[in-house]
Amino acid sequence: MADRLFTGLIWLAVAVVTSLFLWLLGDIVVQGLPHLSWTFLTEEPVNAGRAGGIAPILVSTVLILTVALAAAVPLGLAVAVWLTEFTRQGQQTARATQLSLDVLAGVPSIVYGLFGNAFFSIFLGLGFSILAGGLTLACMILPVFIRTCEAGLSAVNDDWRKGAMALGMSRRSAIWYILLPAASPAIVAGLMLGIGRATAETAALIFTSGYVDRMPESLLDSGRALAVHIYDLSMNVTGGDPAAYASALTLIIVIVVLNTLAQILADRWFSRRISLS
Amino acid sequence: MLRRINSGSSDQKLGGLLAVAAGFSGLILLLIVVFLGKESWPLLAAGDWPALLGDSWYPLEGQFGLMPMLWASLAATVGAIVLATPLGLAGAIFEHFYAPTWLAKGFRLVMALLAGIPSVVYGLWGLTILVPLITQIQPPGTSLLAAMIVLALMILPTVALTSSATLAAVPRDLLAGAAALGMTRKGQILGVAIPAARAGIIGGVLLATARALGETMAILMVAGNVVQNPSGLFKPVRVLTANIALEMGYATGSHRAGLFASGLLLTLLVLVLAWLAARMIRRHSHG
Image (cartoon, rainbow over all chains, first blue to last red):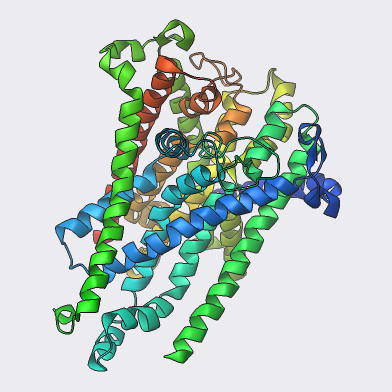
């Protein structure tokens, strides 16, 4: 009897969680879809976003994301390769780097916002700009990206390293032609985690890339990210809910599309290189 | 050892370059600490530390009491943990002991999707669906309770996924032994599997706690943001993170310093939790 009760409770809990999730997602689709249209995606916002579309906001979002990835991916790959291929187990500098990355991963996003405002916007004089926002996000996604790449690289079979060495390959080419392609699934996973976080982020962007919802003309212009737009519409604009829901649906679709794209691109790029070698 | 054999000069250069990159990544943490410290210095240097622990937050009059917001942060976090832990744990148990394979896969997918939904979207949903529901029970609706529920949904995947990973690592022999002794399914789970996975589960809960404390936008949107000690589930509260997001836009001088100081405090709290979580999870994986 008690056993059956327990089983019932477990199923009940799972049913509650699943239905809450379906409720949330269904609500966004049902309320977002009617307002979502081609003109919504291609027009400038009118009347603080109540009418019109989100074109400049989409452009800003993509630019912020591009800046973040352009800064975080090369740096992250370099650090991950250094940690796995150029340091020994337990080496002081490597442990210190890993510790600092773990600490960074735990810092709340609003604190990144504070830091980005004080450092990028004010100290480096970038002001409220797409560049400042993107660089702040780069700092934020760096630790997760490095950690996943590092895990992928250290999972590569040591025989491959020995084989490359036996063939007289330089370490540079061994890393470029063998180790990185072999670790590509992990690198893509890290990339996706980074994209997901960066696109969803709001708190770190309000005081770095700002609120301006005009079409950005350069990276030094302020640009409003999609997530910030949703926040603004639902909190500060009465009657902004339909547009907020449509933006939320767009944001979720953007995240899914970007993830798929990253997967496809990385598959192509890596498979071409591994067949060359 | 192996790595020493054929290091040509170009490889040494590469190693140097990568080490510089690593140094650069380490620099970020230093910069964060330095700049948080620098910006909150005007307040910290005044030496009026007890004032930060006061009850009144009137930044324009120079009163920087963080306690009501700290209590609100803790209350919302504890509430979210209390709601999310049983549900998340039940999900993990379901996945490993009850669900047929296809259903377990489906549940994992739901958790992964839930983890990927942006926090503003949770906030939006909370504000337009949850808050009106709570208003029907007792106005104003934007309340500690709303914050707890939204936060609980957000951290649920963390609890479920970490618990599930540690439950998967429980040795099969233990469970087989329990079954051979004639223990019921419930006995096996509560008496053997959960105790064996305890450290990992606690680690996951601590990790979720750290997330909840650091979360900003979703709570900001549903909690009502009145600075007061949390005195009831239906009362509006303002948490530390929301306070920063709300006031940074116009804060100057020592007000700005006060916000940076609260950021510093928040970081400290979150890091202690993350450190404890890492310790628990590591202890689990060592035995």
